Image 1: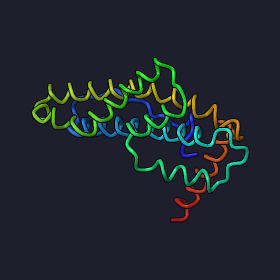
Image 2: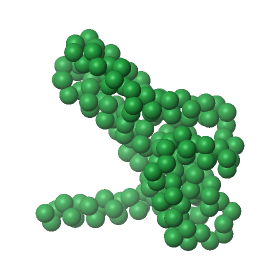
Image 3: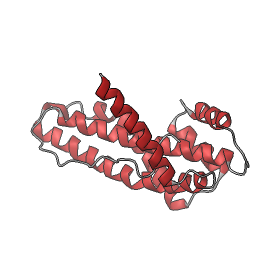
Length: 179
């Protein structure tokens, strides 16, 4: 499992609007939230593809993740839609998330080139990024509920995922401490 529903979703800080790096920090947080959602869609897609198999192997799962890796969010959403119906309200939010994600990655700075030149413009940019972040933080847990429901049938409960995450954290801490 690439991530889990109770993973740390960073709080969205209150902006100072004074630091010139703040626009880029909020952009980074928005991009991070978009990637969390995208990984949730990957988890859902892989779960849907193994659903019904009594004993999928680690190799089966790894191959499915590798196949999903590199596909666009739009492609992943279409693939999920072909395998299972999604609540129309969530489907609409996912389409909005796709639009916001694509805007963020392909147009945000182009459309705000002049805004970077003034304090007022930077404030507008930060506020827009905070709106995107807030929206993605609403949609992402809804996707998590879907993929977790599938993965639970294979023994991947939130508790198990949390235990595995703690093992990884301890191993990283030990590595950090030894350097």
